Length: 147
Image 1: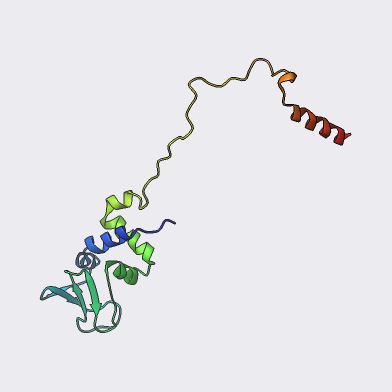
Image 2 (image 1 turned 90 degrees about the vertical axis):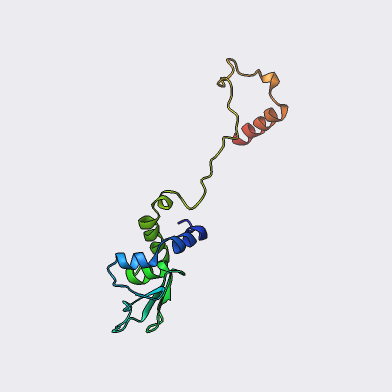
């Protein structure tokens, strides 16, 4: 598997809104100043101890100390690996990034020039007189060994 690029991971953490993701999953957020609060889904919680800070796109629970980015949220709520969480977010929120690959495409250039006309073997084999003398001697030695 190809390595996930730091650029893609950074883009997801910056562009995918944690507030929108949490609301889309059905959690009830309450505004609290410039932040949002909710009961933490990661432990028994009767009071709103989880804070989401939209300006940083991070969450933190003061009860169980769960904290992180949008990728960490998906990992924890969906029970998936880092790679899987990034792929889920990329596919759902950055569809154009999902279509392109993380690695640049290498276009191979044909380094061997093509012949202008196709190669055809000569009509007549080369005369024995033009054969290399060492080849004839080696062949004679080989024939002698086989006897």
